[in-house]
Length: 91
Image 1 (cartoon, rainbow, N blue to C red):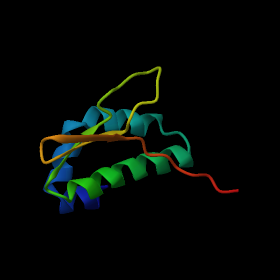
Image 2 (image 1 turned 180 degrees about the horizontal axis):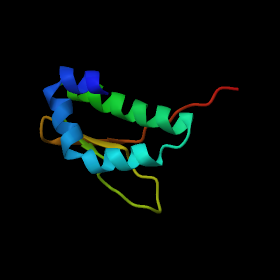
Image 3 (image 1 turned 90 degrees about the vertical axis):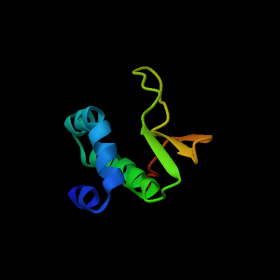
């Protein structure tokens, strides 16, 4: 993640803004799959933030009881998309 922060001002701002959420997820990631999931989420955020027309919100609809979108992506200030990142299991 350090490489992403060093190479992208927008990703650095994202990680600063969502520092407490990211730190909580790091603390709770107790298995390799959980770490891989978090890495994938942050990779998606990094990739989206490479596009200047996107604004990315991380876990904007937080709720402990229901699975909510990982991201809300705003395209040019007027089109909002939300999505959940899922990992497929092989085998």
